[in-house]
Length: 99
Image (cartoon, rainbow, N blue to C red; front, side, top):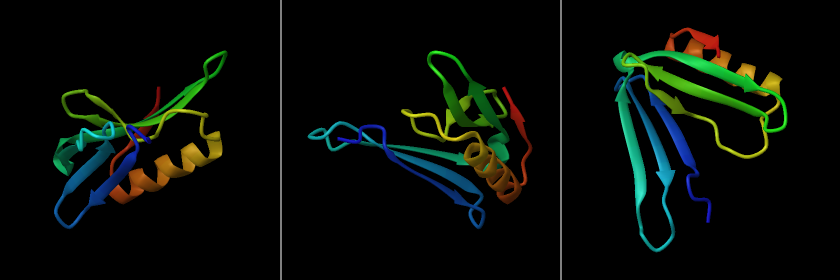
């Protein structure tokens, strides 16, 4: 069903970030989140090892909301997560840090 799947769109020309996620089938609902770039403070890389490992990338807004950019499931390899964070931070011209 791919509930929660979708895509992230980073539009520098219009200074917006759009996150589109799929809802449950039959409901015909997609979730659309849109943020102006000036509301984005930074990117955060979260790495937790152990029984339930987690590796995720979050947008951090100026009001301290954490918006996940990576999907759930098998943890992404660390080098790939760092590469995505670095590339996106440079593209959006914002800092990134580790949680």
